[in-house]
Image (tube, rainbow, N blue to C red):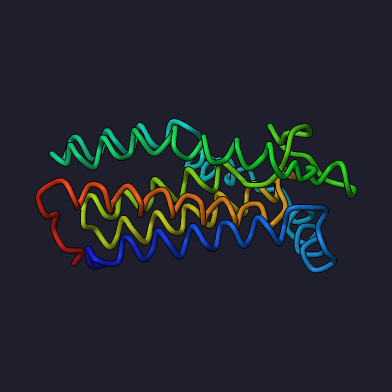
Length: 200
């Protein structure tokens, strides 16, 4: 992932986020509702609670700690800044869209701490996981960590639908938001600091 691509990734992800929020701002259409039911009705797997933790707020400070331990102080600072930036965009969007949670629309299996109140769009878990994955991959230059982070984001997104917390469109928009935040902050870091190692 070359340095000049970060601004492009940020722009494309932000555009995708806005498009997904616009399309999935109200009750789900038939295809999305069917996709939700397929995932939500899947058998419960206790191990799925583990990847969900990648989308909790501690994930970004943990990412910052890993980056700081590797001597990547500017990237560690970016990971700390990512949380309030993501949360600000998430909360603002939810206040505008107010998309209902699945349980308010269809028969839903609720698992663990799945919320039943408040707006559903976007998924903060998916956004945090995606932002952490992007910054960890860019800050360390590790393709392996980038792949693991992407897989973690997919699993986190799946779990949130499986738990009954979100519609598929919510987690897709959340992931796009996280990538936009991560790529935007990567652009700032690259503009103001020394060059980071290439992914290899």
